[in-house]
Length: 61
Image (cartoon, rainbow, N blue to C red):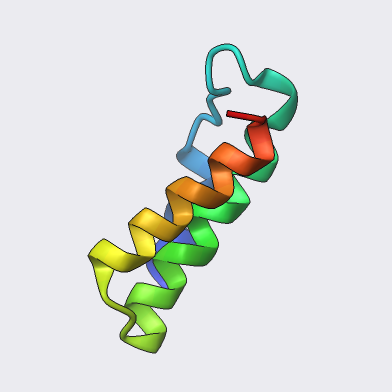
């Protein structure tokens, strides 16, 4: 993740419209699942499906 560290200061955090109070939590969940794919060789489709379910539970959908 060194490339992330090098470029993070240039990023602009955006809130998810309608979920502004939960955007940080949503970003964390997404980041965790991306890490599972990149570092733990989890199947990308399964990881993103699981990620979606977790986010929907988080935001009450």
